Length: 117
Image (cartoon, rainbow, N blue to C red):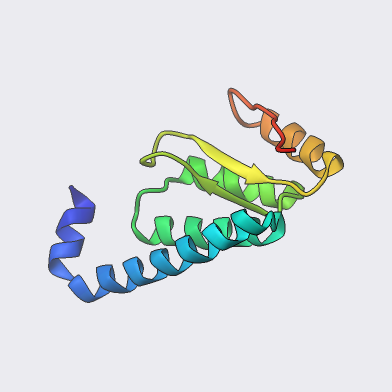
């Protein structure tokens, strides 16, 4: 509801946000197709910032995202519709993945690891 009111009050703000989102989406699609996980991570960071600007993130999600990046993730962002505590992170190797897992396990109720071949 808040996001809709802000959009209605400031359409230029929302248009700028959507332009940024479309740019990130298009670049991420290409990076995924190329298997460029470093770029995917960087774009995840950009996307999370846009979601913060949209006000759908929250302190808890931002804390998890920041902890993942500090521990070695090349990128991290909230997932879902926001404010629910779900996020993901991109790590370039097993060492970074283990460090991110350990950091998040200290502050999150559930943490999972997976990999793409």
